[in-house]
Each structure stands twice: as C-alpha cells, then as structure tokens.
Amino acid sequence: MNSAETKLRAPARDVQLAIFLLGLLALVVILLSLSRPALPAENPAIGYVYVFGDAVERPGAYPFIRRRISLSDVFLRAGGDKAAAELLPAAVVVPPQLIYFDSRLLRPVSEGESFLLDINRASPIGLESLPGIGEVLARRIIAARPFGSIEELLRVEGIGEGKLEQIRNLITTTSE
Image (tube, rainbow, N blue to C red; front, top):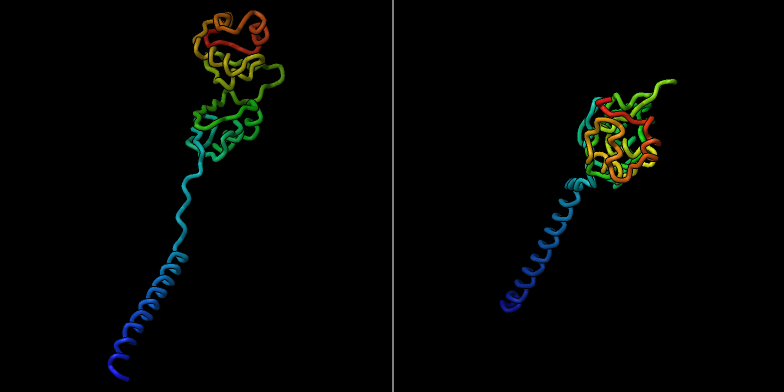
C-alpha cells in the first residue's frame, strides 16, 4: 500500500468513527430520556372551591377538574355528614367559589318543627331554594339587607304581596 492510499483511507475511517460515535451518543440520549421519570402534569384543576364552616371536618381549598359541581359533592369532600348532605338544595357550584356551611342550617327538621330561613344571613343558594326566588331576586335581596322585618322585603324590586305571602312562612329575620 502506498502513502496516497493510506491518506484516502484515513479520512474514511475518521468519518466512520464519527458516525459510530454520533449513533452511540444518540442511543445514550434515548436511553436516558426513557429512564427519567415523567414530569408531573400541570395541575388540571379548573378552579378551587374554598370551604369553611362548623359543619365540615376539613375546611380548606379543594381543586375541581369539572366546571360544574353539585353542592353536596363539595360538602362531602370537605368532610360533611352524609345525612346533612341530603338536606342541601340541588344546587350547582361553579369554581371559584367560597362556601360557608353552618351546622345550624344543616340539621334535619323534626316533625312539628319548622325551619325558617333567615333572609339577613342566608346565602344566595339558600335564598334560591325558596319558591319563586331565582338568582336575580336572591342578589337583590342580599343587596337590600338588612331587613328589620319580613314586610321590608316588599322594597326589593320583583317581590310583591303575592310572592311575599308565598314565602312568609318559610323565612325570618334576625330581628324577629
């Protein structure tokens, strides 16, 4: 073999060696990426519902991945009693939301006993549980607080004598 042939073969060997080393490096990178633990997914929570009150065992912030959650699901997740959850209105919660569960309002009503909703302290959901009161009227009632008597509800736009008579036996005020 002459020196010209050796010079031609030397670069060819260098190219083969470089290709081999690049292939080996690619293999090492692939194996390392497969052996690494996957990065945790971002928090998929759509929103948080902040729960507090004396009727739940575990008050705090709860992430939810659904856009609409039932009020009883929120209550149970925060450690609320199953029997008390049945007393909750069939309301839907849309995160973010701040909810207070009062144990005085979540007790079964005994026979002969009536439960009166305090219009000065009731939540929008509580007010909406009254017949004929929707979301808009509930907001108006809250905006017009405080009420010294049930009759003062007549000053709320949308509540007339008929609607007041319909809910009179279901409500109270803190001053009565």
